[in-house]
Image 1 (cartoon, rainbow, N blue to C red):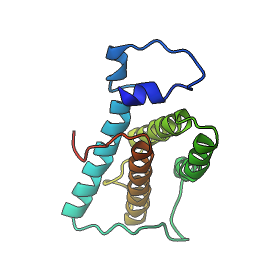
Image 2 (cartoon, rainbow, N blue to C red; image 1 turned 45 degrees about the vertical axis):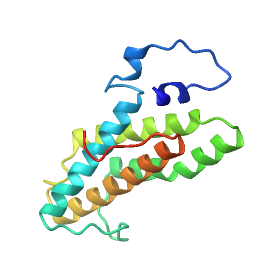
Image 3 (cartoon, rainbow, N blue to C red; image 1 turned 30 degrees about the vertical axis):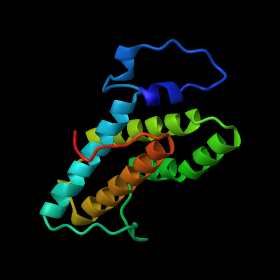
Length: 151
């Protein structure tokens, strides 16, 4: 419910719909929380397979267009936080988290992470997913919202 309120610019009127606020689809807190939990599940499976995930991508990491788009979106996090702080408006962070979540879910739908065609692709996708999870966790924490490891 907190996310549903914070996602709206404070200078705008809103109509609160309790059912919509807890929906697992669309611009809602549960949608973002579920995506975070999904990524954490992928990380647990990778760990169970003994896969070590580096903190950063190597310079020679294979990247497709969607992966580049995700990296560019992740790069926008600092600007979204700064803008929200400068304007005293947390809606920017909330909507950034939603946009990143939406892009990740589309990527996850289109590309396999743990069953990628090559080890290099798998590593690249795991690094991207891990970093997206960090950003979602930090973004939601800035909004005062916890993200669960499992759902």
